Amino acid sequence: MSTLAVPLPVGGTSLQRSLARAERMRKLRAFALTLPLLGFLLLTFLVPIGALLKRAVENPEVASTLPRTGEALQRWNREEVPPPSAFAAVAADLAALPDRSDAGALARRLNSEVAGARSLILNTYKALPIDGSPAEVKARMLALDERWAEPKYWQAIAKNSSRWTADYLLASVDLKRDAQGDIERMPADQRVFAPILGRTFQISAVVTVVCLLLGYPLAYWLSTLSARQANVLMILVLVPFWTSILVRVAAWIVLLQSGGLVNGALQGLGLISQPLQLLFNRTGVVIAMVHILLPFMILPLYSVMKSVPGTYLRAAVSLGSPPLAAFFRVYVPQTYPGIGAGALLVFILSIGYYVTPALLGGGDDQMLSYYIAQYTNVNINWGMACALGALLLAATLVLYAVYRRIVKSELSLG
Image: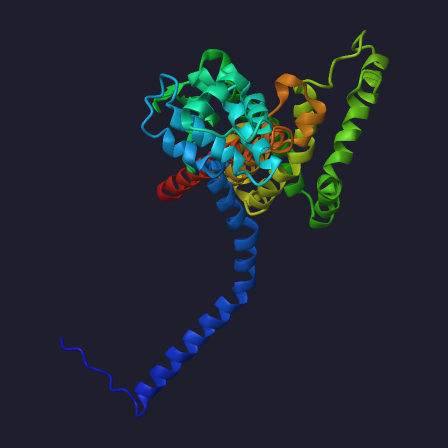
């Protein structure tokens, strides 16, 4: 059977061009409307993340202040005392520093590698100028401080003489480079970040599970109410959004302290004879974090539950299924998207918490964000802080990828 071609009307080609041009203009206008949002995301989200990742592998302190020394140590075997030319290069590089603050930054960076490097660098800087032939400079520096004869300080300089390094990222997962540049695990007494990361995931998992156990029945109850009643109660759920985190933490300190309202009520009811230790431990951290993050679990669950028809549950019961079995076999599977979205949101927000564990937890309850702040504000080690931040970012992306994979597989099966 032949197909008859429908002839275009007169001017049909120009009409098609006009429609295509109008479609292009519509797309350009839509793209122009999104430009402010894209620019805002670029400046406030992508650029800071790029700077964080760059700083996590950047090591400028030694490379920029000791360039001659780095070149002199390139052919050094990293086992014996370097040749006199390396001593002369150190003296020349320190003399070329424009300010004492540069020497202080160099000293702090090397001291993070080898204890005692800070005093060694600053004492040598104070003794400048050190002139003469390389052999004379070496003799004067050894007379000034005998530690210049120890290879470990030179090894620290040689290892950090490159501007780009993976040392910070390796240290964030308890790995390091030895004097020869080979990667190895840190000694057992120095492996700190793997337990901290495990603790961070553990606390976040507990908070997520508690939020799910508390938020699921509450969201289900809200979904069964009328719109007017649900809106009124939803305002109470959203109250934590409108209160400062510091105010909420201070309120929990008042409630959970030994003479607080919680212990007072429990003792008044005769349930306990002595006050419970609810502050400066894991219990206080979990309670406060659950209170803050519970709305992030309820909102996704509520939005999904409102879209589940109640007739499904009634139909299952009318067909002979027990109410409890009908609820878990018919209703709960339809809320899996809300469970996954709420759990992912709460867990991702939990692993980045800092203020609440810092104020309500003890020394063994601090999460990874606490040490990021410590390296930023106290130790002034931006490279290590950015490496730990990159570790948290990688964990977040992995969790999101796993969630997307699970959702995609469920949709394909459905």
